[in-house]
Image (tube, one colour):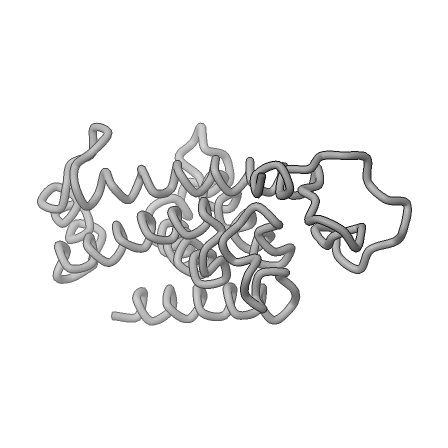
Length: 190
C-alpha cells in the first residue's frame, strides 16, 4: 500500500509547484517523472562510483585493492599512498552509495566532487578534455552530475526526502562544491 502511494504515477496536477520534485496535490505523495529521472541518474552514477571505490578498497570488479591502489597513489605523489588509497576509495564508495540512495546527498556529492577534482589535477588534466586522449571529460561529467543532484535535490524517491536538505537548493550546492573543493585543495597541498 505504501509503495502504491509513493509510486502513484497518476496524471500530474495543473497547479504550479515551487520545486520540480514537490508534490503537486494535497493528497498522497506522488512520484513524478522528475523523481524517477533523478532516481535513474542517482542509481547509475552512484552505483558506478561505489563500484569504482570498491575496486580501490576491496579489489572487487577487477580492481587492484588497497596494495595496488596505494602504489599507484604513491606514484602520483600522494604519501603515504595506502592511506590516500583508503581515503580515495572510501570517498568513491560511500559517496557513490550516498548518491544512489539519496542519503546525505550534499555530503555524498562533496565526496565525489573532491575525488574528481583530484583526478583532474593529478591524472587526467595534462591530457586535455577528451576521454579518448585520457582527458578530464569523464571526471567533469561525474563532478557536474554530483553538483547538479545536490542543487536539484535527490527527489522524492530518496532517503533525504525526510530531511530539510532533501529538496536541494543553492545552500546544498554551495556546501557540496565548497567542501569538495576544499578537501581537494587540502589533499593536493599535502
